[in-house]
Length: 396
Image (cartoon, rainbow, N blue to C red; front, side):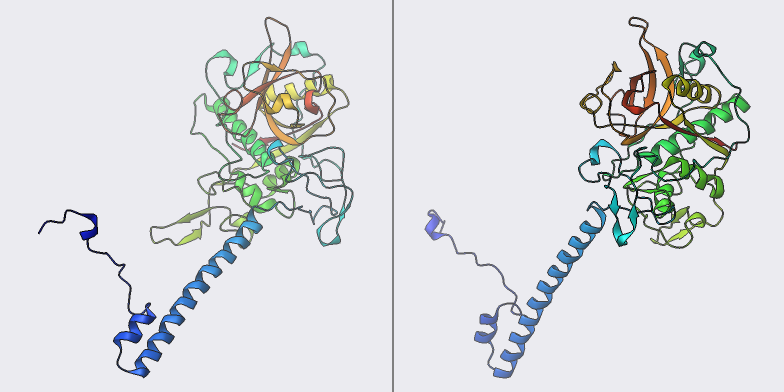
């Protein structure tokens, strides 16, 4: 007979395992001993399941607090000077600590140099071949852009990268350092051979791994001491140590300088490569001058002859945060210190207004600004950008 009314539909009951249904067990079993055993087994299974869930919840909470929670990181190898926070995305999470005590009751000393230039003492430098002195801005071309070498259409800069993927990390200092140095490797090779060689992208993750107790982490860092470390140890590229926006990385065991390069096989076994290709620098130095004109002269001298440099800047202004590209940032406001680190890849002058500008690469990916770059007025120390600079010469 066909079923024509919903009331005629058979009732579908969920299928329950006898081991989990105490009532079913007690009703179908004729042995009291077996019934007791089945009830005990079911209760034990439920407790184990609940315990497993609680264990994973606790583990997840621990990992989240350890990886994502903002912490004040104190340096233990440079007279207890605190690590300063960087970039505008993290200004509320990792603000520069006030004068006082840090973790472990370690003295915290706040300087006026800001993020990227916070470790005390003299600037670390190893200068072997100082560039010829320049006395006038007229000694340089009106426009210079390593993305368009000598107006040939040849780009000698490397890729814009994104420090905020796969998670938020205050590693602008590491990205600016390796980006400028990767550019300089490409430039030096091109000048030597006249050919565009394979692009080398140095690993910012290495600096996060090896700098945590010395010169930097996801809570800020110092390019000057990063250059010093690279000079002493060398650095590998991204294919050896990809960026994971954390410190230390997934294989942060042993001597960091000797274990920079990792690889895995199809069985899931990972290990350290003993003799990877390392890139080294022959010399490194800093740019610190009292006036914008002095800074311009020396910065343009370095950029023109050897390639992009690293500078610190203040990044919390509304104009900078809302920058969409296609115009020059101009801001006469005097801001306190610096909060971010970027690289200068060139300069120019607007033909319509005569405004001079820097060409600056950020580390927020190509969807930010003008495909990852921005223009900032030159010669007025906008965002304190003409205060502190650093450079290094690669060995090629």
